[in-house]
Length: 154
Image (tube, rainbow, N blue to C red; front, side, top):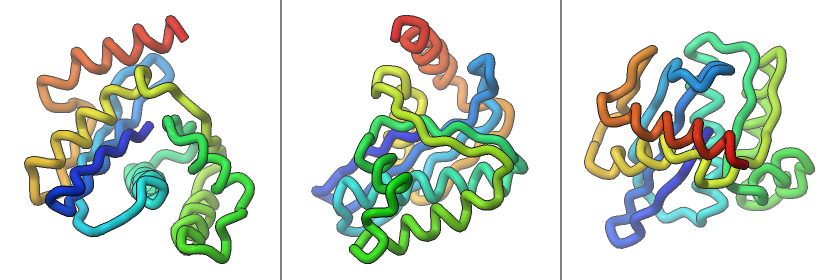
């Protein structure tokens, strides 16, 4: 469940991810600042790779990755980027995918992913990777509820 935001004026990119259970409750979350000049597609793929690594290290073995980037999902599933710029990242994603008993990538509208968006924005003001386990920052609850409400409507 990733949302990626970019601030090209400072060459800083932000990644945010949230792991929720089937009831929508927060299990863990991460906010990652990165620096560099990357296309939106590369940022999406980096976010997926970071999220898979985070989920694997956190001990999850079954995962549904929801994101609002259909092109990233298509590239991962089809493998068409294997020999292009994004190929190395996609290969990393495929290798990390082997660590899970069950893994799927699904499209989720941006309105259903506000928690990840807010976590990404949070990274803009940070120089460190921030991780929350079982309980997120206090401001996140309103966005968890908004995501749950938007999922019911979609």
